[in-house]
Amino acid sequence: MNEPKVIEQEQSTEFSLPVKAQNTGYNLVFNDEQQYSLAQLYQSPYGESGSALDGLLQHVEALMKQIGVSASNLRPGMLAFLMPISLKLGYPLAFMFNAKDSTAAADHLLSTCMRLAPKEWFVDISHLKEEALYNSGEFFSNKVLVCRNPVTVKKIEPDLLNLIVNGYSTRQALSKSKYGAETREYHVKGPVGFIGIETEAGCGMFNHPAILRLKVVDNHGREGTDHDLPLASGRVSENSIDFEIAKLTEYLSRFGPRKVTIPFQPRLFEAILRKRPADYRVKTNIIKKTLSSCTILNDPPQISGAQLMAKLYNSRVECAEDWLIGRSRTTVRALPEPELCSGETEYRVLKNLLDGLLPVKDSILSVLEIVVVKRKRTQV
Image (cartoon, rainbow, N blue to C red; front, side, top):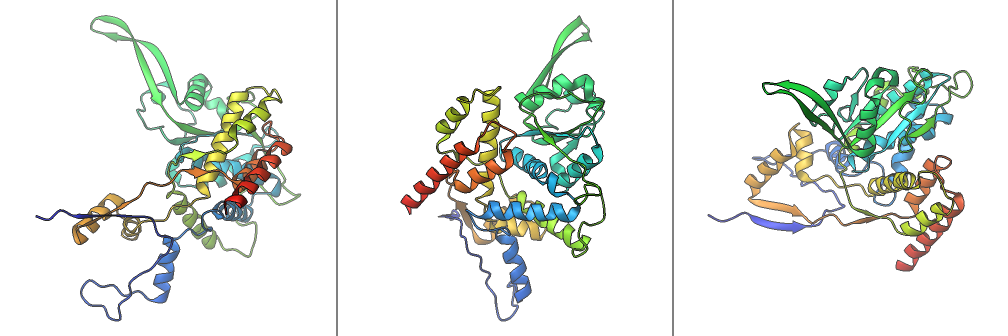
């Protein structure tokens, strides 16, 4: 029996569909509208590699405005939007919305950010008990922990902090057995992301430098609204917004962990260290995670034929791959994805997102951006 032929090929940036004049046998006929729809699914809807990050963030910003997020809360909203994605890319982040004056704006912003990512990425930990936490197995691993009221988990706050910051938590407890009382260890593993709301009653909870505080302003009655109105703009229908969100969440599900090289990282971190900031290692780690996540999002993957078929027929990718192999007796094996390198776009986005939240001065990033631009131009 002949073995299946293995073909190594690079991912193509073009999309084409074979169209037959007549529908004979198993040949499929696609009209212009169907071909356009399939091509849109196959390609990145927010731009090609190198420009996809700007296109994605501009699109998300427009969606947030349409849903009802005010201009003053767009930056914390954009950071919160990146948080669940960074977890899936292997760079978990954690944020708390600081909204002591009014939790309505923060609650609406949190709901908006959760709406813009696949819902299965999140898990609500309100009123979570110690027993449920440590008997969860891997349930919380690679999930975003959502806490709208920190007071409800005050008893297990140290355990949650360990899980968020260190990626795991351990607790010892006495248990009875036929040999008498014995000490047992219970474990819960991450990594996890975290997003919560700092209420007046829960002020000071989850106080760790790895959890960034994002100030949220209630602008009701001044510039827009942060409350759950039907639409911020009457020009866009709710159905249209729902479709855009569905397209966005499908697009985000394509991404996975990638190795990222950050040029000039030693110079950047040395420049920050000279400012003698508190919690230097924690803050530079936040910079590295944010920059790496932005770099991956700026290089969107092309959807494969098996992924396309799986989405069309609501099946698993593995099933579609096996079906294709059985039909063609050909195994298509993509070459390993190349290592990514952060550039001028990612540095600019990093500066815009973290300016004022971390000890990253404009002068440092501006110099590094210029160096990156010059380096890229000399390589062309």
